[in-house]
Image 1 (cartoon, rainbow, N blue to C red):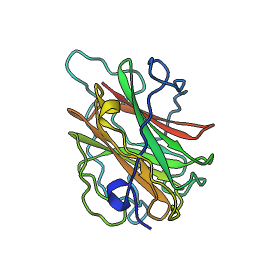
Image 2: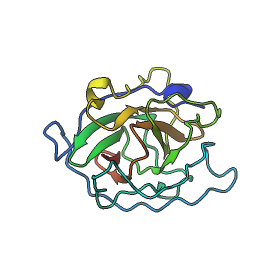
Image 3: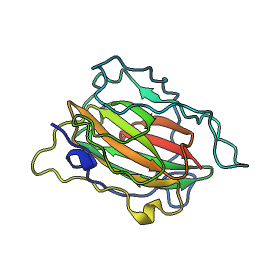
Image 4: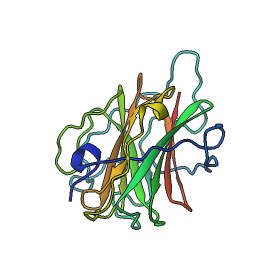
Length: 214
């Protein structure tokens, strides 16, 4: 089964932000340190996208990089092995914080997913290998497991809209809907350049949190 926004149909749901920001309903999560993803053996990773070379972290001139942020791939759990069932997809929301912008994927079920978040040169659909049009100048690929197959009556979540993205370094953030062999996929378009980022996984409810330095 293939799907994810433009792949087989990522839909979306925009909300708003987190703690540290007046419009943020969520507390700032405790950031866990994910393992750095090693290159995956042929056939092991579900994504055909090639990770980009990793330059030294940098933001615009005169701006320091927040502690804990870098350009390395972030892997959680035993990815690409499947984690717990997290439902048929995840809504997405974007919010502004001091020094960084936050993208949150909200899952319907309470399982613990495995994940891989990394920069890629070209967004490519998991499974089909077709290019995916994503706004922005750099692209973060988000892969999570275990995403179940949506039923015919399941409504796709919405992507983040212009009002939510305004004033952030996020050009586009797509919800996750369905997956290929249990792996759901999304892309985050980043403005200007590759920016250092960090990833954390939160529970009750299950959330994947990606902070991108400004």
